[in-house]
Amino acid sequence: MTLKDIAERAGVSMITVSRVINTPEKVSEKTREKVDKILDESGYIHNIVAHHLASKRSGIICMYASKDMKMLDPFFQQFLVGIGSALSETSYSMSLVNEIRATQFCDGYIFSGHDYSDLALEKAKKTGRPIALFGTIPDPSVDCIDTDNVNSAKKVVSYLIGKGHKRVEIVLNTVKSDYVWERMEGYKQALAENGISFEEKRVHRVENSMQGGMEMASWFQEYGTDTTALFFITDLMGIGFIIAMEGLGYHIPDDVSVVGFDGLGHHLLAYPRLTTVIQPVYDISRALAKCLLDRIQKPKTPPVRVLLDGELLEEESVKTIEEV
Image (cartoon, rainbow, N blue to C red):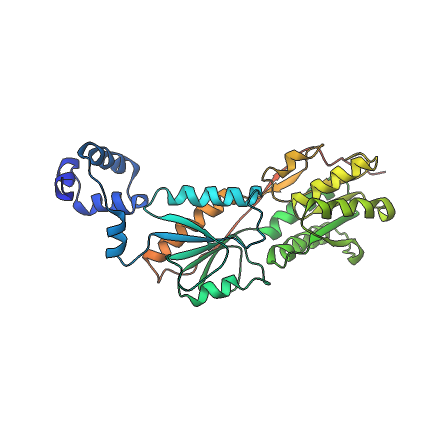
């Protein structure tokens, strides 16, 4: 059957049939299902390769992951699933790469973050292909969707303060990325809005790993006499801290309260379970894929700048301090 035959049977235009085949996300679900049923019954086979050759496109999106990205990291897994889910609704496929080359066969790039020590984003920009980034950078050539790190961090620190905690440590990691400083800014804003002075001595930096969090347990044992709570800017570090503290004979939250940031499954590995902020990683990655596909179709679309708020997840790692 031809597209014309299918359009006549479905009672729609040939353009609508073409959209169902090539850009189904642009067609209503009811119409898409009707046309798909007729396509299946007719045995119609769409030559995707020929379509992309005709449109001078590859039909491939490159998802960049740095070489030190841990493939079993829940963040990365949710990110991949979200992109794959969005692309599965189109004729596009995904290629996972850990380096950027001008000769790569793809129509655009999705980045899971931006590390200033990594030149991959700059190389991708030089290819002239569109880019969508999980993060925020002041570059109109890159579409950006990110968690609102400032407000989300402020939310969880304000929660601690509302529970009576006035002496809260913040534990940063050594990643050279904007989210580190944004979560620090949220911490500062929460203190200021609650009349608590910021103290540089309460800022710490360790490796973004469970081992880094364990190092903070040793610090607490020696220096944490007046500390009532710690805010780890990633759950991974917070979990390491909780595990090490239990090994040293402390009990969370009786001896000290702990909160994290990510909410991607790490928090369930700790006992007690870690109170945290849930990043909407799946939703953001789906939105990034759709954003990039729109950019490929309509290059002159205005730059995208979107921030999504994180959700506070109250678990068992924070106690209330009653005012005397």
